[in-house]
Amino acid sequence: MTGNEPDATEELETALEEQAEAVADEVPEIDEGRYLYCIVRTEAETGESTLETTGVDGEPVSVVVADGIGAVVHPCEGIYDTADLAQVRRWLVRHQTVVDEAGEAFGTPIPFQFDTILRGDDERVREWLREESETLERALSELAGHWEYRVEVVETEPVPDEALIEDDDRLRELDARIDDSEEGTAFLLEKKLDQRLAELRAARRESLTADLQDRLAERAREVHALERSPTASLDDAVVDEGDARAGAGGSGDGGAGSGDGNTLCRLTLLAHEEAEGEIGSVLDDVAATDGLEVRFTGPWPPYTFAPELGGGEDRNGGNRSTNPDPSP
Image (cartoon, rainbow, N blue to C red; front, side, top):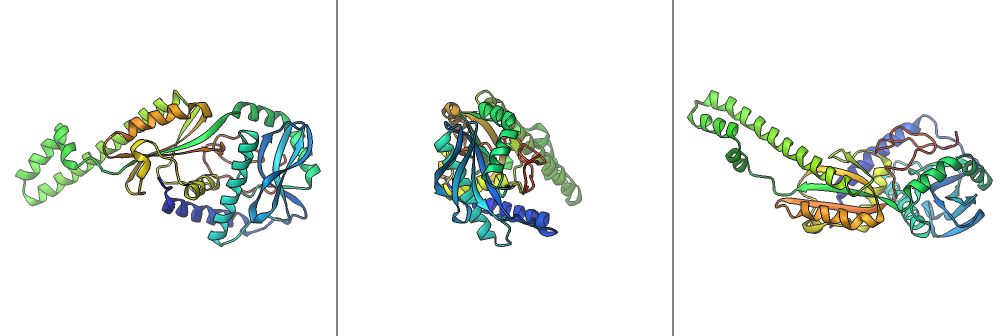
């Protein structure tokens, strides 16, 4: 199944506009800095090593290590800011690729949001790693072997109005009164019927979401509901771009999704890699329901669940500002 490209594009456009507004008044000057991709645990105690990949704008990527904790970085002299949406998309995909490859090489990383830059050279990075060692050690230990997964349940074939009317006493009563009423009265009754239909559909959506969250919570460490329409978080945009780039993973009958339909819920969960099969089984049950499609993507680095490093507003999927110096 493919990712939802129109939603990802709309999200990127919104995120880009917000980022542009945030830096429009003053673009920080950085004589020397390090673009930060993620934090990893390494076998080496100190020094520097390379990661066999290239970063944003083709920059060489290295792993700067202090006391067994590594920062995946590349040298830079300024933030990455442009009004060219296509360029931002390329940067986002490249950022995600580096974090993915770091995860494959070192295990679960602590990812930074796109365009996080630390002022200074490699020695400043080591200094910062030592300053934050307690927080980083705790986060690496807690997240080891855990990844973020995204779930979207889409109603591709809505329950017909007639079926809802047949199963609800109030709707049957309204429907019968409409048939026996004059035009003006019938119009008002139709409004009440439409409102009741909307209430039942909302209740069904909420019930399905709550049940799915409960079932997933038994197999995941954390489960959070996302807005049914994608938000403007740049971290979300990185993951959504990864969906579009690699193709989203599917579950059950959701494997041939076309992107059409009404989204009933979007969830993000933090789970151990060994629980992925159990999560897939739960989603297979949902996907077996007529008219429903499940879009299941991951594993992703735990963007939503990583601790704030260098400031931000909302750990659970909110917008976080680009920070040219994440040191306290």
